[in-house]
Length: 246
Image: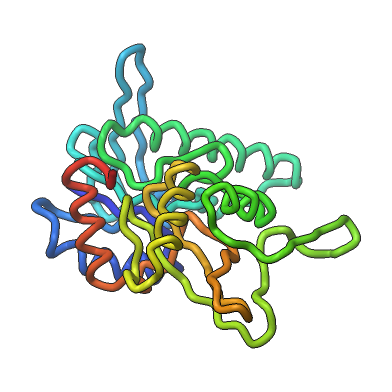
C-alpha cells in the first residue's frame, strides 16, 4: 500500500494521486487530513525497538503501518476536529498536543516517506523567506538584495518579484528538477538546496532579472506538483519504489 497524505484543499496532490495510481505496483490510497481528524479510530504504540500504527477511517479503510510501503507526505499541519474549546489557551494546548501526536506517528512509519515531518512543519522543514534566501546563496543561486526590518510590516514568508518580472515555479524531486529546461547551474543549486534542507520534494520560485540571470525568490515543502507534469509523477513513483531520490 502507498499513501498520499494531504488536505481536501490540495488539488495538486489529488491530481498526483490519480496519476500515481497507474504507476505504482500496489494500491494507492489518498488520505485527507480532514478524514484523519473526523471519526477515525487510532492505535499508535511506541515501544523500545519499534512503533506500531493502525488507523481505521470512518469510511472503513484500515491503514496499518506494517503494510505501508511508501508515503507522499503533504500534511502541513493536523486539521483540528470540530470541537469548541472554552479559551484560546486550551485551543493552543490541544493543537500542540495533536501536532506532537502526528509528528510521532508519521516519524515512526518505517516505510519510504517523501518529506518526513519536522517539529516546525509536518511535511518538512519550514523557513521564513530570509532564511530561504540565505540558504540559497550557499548553493550558488543568485538572489536580489533583500532587506527587512520590524517596521516593514511584511509577514516574512513571501517575496514579491520585481515589477514586470515573471515568476516561474520548478519542482525538485530527488536529484531531478522539473521542468527540465532550466539552466544546469540553476538546477544544481535547487537540488543542493533541497538536499541541505532535507526535502525530497521541494518547490522553488525563480524569475529572470534585467541582466538575464535567474534569481531565487523562495521555496516550499508543498510545491505545485502539476507544474512538473507526468515526468514528475514518474520520478516520484521511482523514488517511492527504490527508497528515495538520491
